[in-house]
Image (cartoon, rainbow, N blue to C red):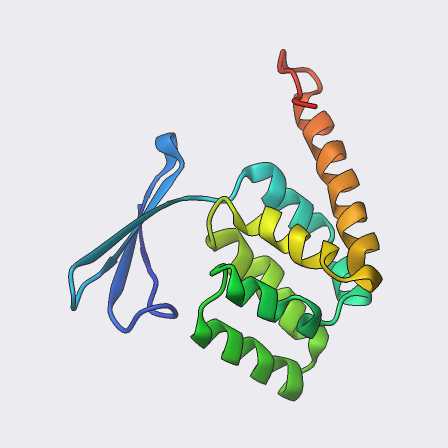
Amino acid sequence: MVQDFSSLFSIALVITDTPHNLVYVVKVDTELLICCRKMDEVHRQVLRENLTYLQDNLSPEEVLDKLFETKIISDDQLMRLRRESQTVGERSCIRELVVYILPKAGSSAFPEFVKALTAKDHTSYISDHLLIQERKVQQRLCEGNSCTMAD
């Protein structure tokens, strides 16, 4: 599967290797090849199912700098999200981050997002909520299957 990834690079292609859960990003003008693991499906579901919860409880500024520091979001994404937060609104910014950016940011994006929430006392309840939801999604996905959940 090949996708246009021009929002990240001026000229780029994304090749998804689904059986191996890998994503290759090829920056055509410099022939740079980046390989990273995609976000786990459980984490994608947790983010998707908790979008309105996050929009109601989180200000983007609480996590953006930490996500930039941990290289989950790029400088361009940071600036775009801040601009969106100021012009369109915080809810739209959270939607962009949760629906479009984090799921494509690799396997460490969800844990780093939760860590960023835990770093501030007044947002740690959000990280607690997401971790509880993660467990529920894991249980739901394992129902009817012969899988075991890691503790």
